[in-house]
Image 1 (cartoon, helix red, strand yellow):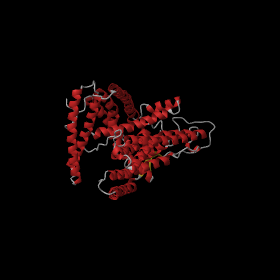
Image 2 (cartoon, one colour):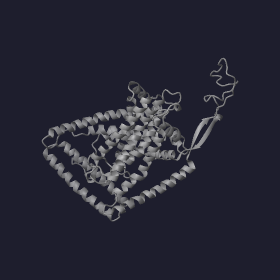
Image 3 (cartoon, one colour):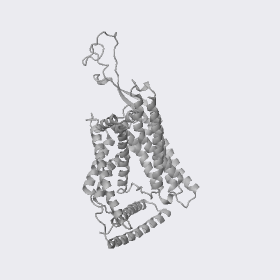
Image 4 (cartoon, helix red, strand yellow):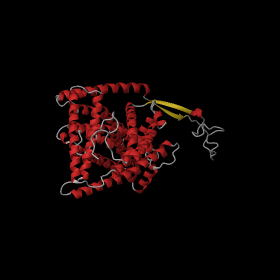
Length: 509
C-alpha cells in the first residue's frame, strides 16, 4: 500500500512538471514574433491556464488510481487515501473559474487596449471592466446561492422490527423482512410512500463549480457536438481536396499576381476599419465588416499556402512535394482513426447514457479489461478519450467561428498566434474542461465509480435545485448527439468540395 502511494505521488509530480514544460514549449513556438520579449503577464496566464486545464483532465484518471489504494479495504474510510481529491477538485475548479471570468478577461482587455495610451490608463481600463464583471457575478452568485443553493436527494425511508438472533435463516424473496407481511426494509419492494426528499444546502465552492459547469456544458454541447464530427471528417475532406499535381511556372505567376492584388485590397480595407475604430465608429456594421475581413484574411492565407504546395520552390522542390503528399496521407490516417474514436464516443453516449437502463458498459468495460492487461493501459486510454473531447471542442469552435458572425475567430497558427487569440482559446479550453470532466465522470461512471469526481459532478451537481432537470432529461447529451449528426450530414453533402470564400478573395479558376 505504501509503495503504491509513493509511486502515485512521484507520477503526479513528474506529470505536472512535464505538462508545464510542454505548455511553455507551445507558447514559444506558437507566439507571434510581435509578442517576442514582451507581454509577459498574458504569457504567464496562458501557460498557467493551459497547465490547469491539462492537469484537471488528468486528475480524473488520478482520482481512479487514488481509489486503488483502498481496493482491499472493506470500506473506503478504512484506509488513508494518497491525495485529498475532493479538496483538490474544488481548488482546481475555483482557480479555473477565477481565470476564466477575471484574470483572462483582464489580460485580454489590457493586451487589446489602445497602444497609444499609457500603461497606467490601459491597466485602469482593464480593471474597470473586470471589477464591474466581478461585482455583477458576485451579486448574481450570492442571490442564486441564497435562493436555490440547495440539493434535493430522493431517498427511501426503510425500517425494520427487531428479533433475537435466529438459529436458522427464514428470509426469502417473498419475505425479505422481519415479521409477517413486513416489507418496509426492502428498497426494491417498499411502496411509493416510502420515498422522501432529503434537502440540504450545498457548499458555496461546489455551487460555483456547478454553475461554471452549466455554462461550460452549453458551450461543450454546441462546440463539442460539432467538433466530434468535423475533427475527423475535416481531416479526411482535406485529403480529398488535396492538390493532385504540381502547376507550371506561368500558372504560379498568374496566381501569385492575383493573390498580391487581393492582399493589397485587404490591407486597404483593414486600414479603413482601423481609422473607423479610432474615430469611435464601432457599431454593428463595423463589427460585421471586421468579421468579414477576418474571414477573407484566413481564406487568403489558405490560398497562399495551397499555392506554395502546388508549386514547391528551391533546391529541394521534389522533397517538399513528397512531404506535402505524405502530410495529406497522414491527415487521411489520423482522420480515419479519429472517425473511429468519434463513432465510439457517440455509440457509448447512446448505449450507456441515453438508454435507461444501459444496454452495456461498453467503453467502461474496455478500460477495465485494458487495466487487466497492464495497470496504466486503461487509465491512458481513459485520459485519451477525455483529451479527444477537448480537441473536438476546439475544432468545433474554429468551424463555427468561420461561419457565424457572432463568434470571434481566434485561430492558432505555428509561429503566428497573437496573445489575444491565445487567451481566448485558453479561456475556452478552461471553461469546457470542467464540462468535459463532468461528462466523462458520467459517461464512464462504471469505471470511475466511488471517486471524488463522481461525488461532486455526479451526486451533488445532478441533484442541485433548478439544475438537476437538465441532467435528468439528458438535455446536453441529446444536444451533443443531434449537432454531431447534423455536422456529419453537412460534411457528407458539402465537405468533399473545395472550400470557396463568399467574398472576393479566392484563387482564379
